[in-house]
Image (cartoon, rainbow, N blue to C red; front, side, top):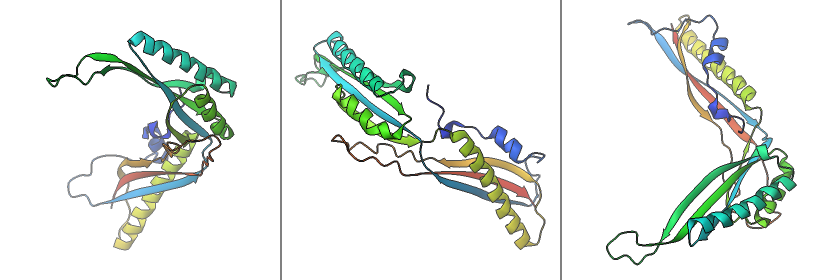
Length: 234
């Protein structure tokens, strides 16, 4: 299974480390508080890509559609392996079998089944970004007839997320301190903290318009951000 994406990490353990010793409790009635949002972001260069492609086949019966699809998918997987893609980096992302109905029913019903349509797609983890083009070309040369997109990501996303979360908390504390100083009061202990948003653009579907071999592919940069809500006593 692919490594968890950035958006899957929880904040509980990190917040405990960032705010060690802080007391978290619901503010008593009449307690003066200040609420702020801390923000942090970074632009990073992606170092891994995910390509999703597949095959759609049809047949008079389910077995025929399945046999044709299996045969082509085996060729696709073999072609990916020839490009140096490990089997552990190839995962089925969609598999569906649906009936194809005739359109001659007059009572509004779907009509008789005329055949079956099978769609099978795989998502390929490409760790060498220079192989993105050859991987796509190899999949289509082997029989793929569907392209579902290309997205970029960062392998070591956990460390990046931890750092951004720390900076977001620090940013929130700084804002609260400035506001308290402007009010002429002392900033108290943090009373509550929660993550309010994470933004991880993955450049999804960047290659939906892919039509020809050798199309230029630029990874660019990814902007990742984290926001936290903090409430301090005054």
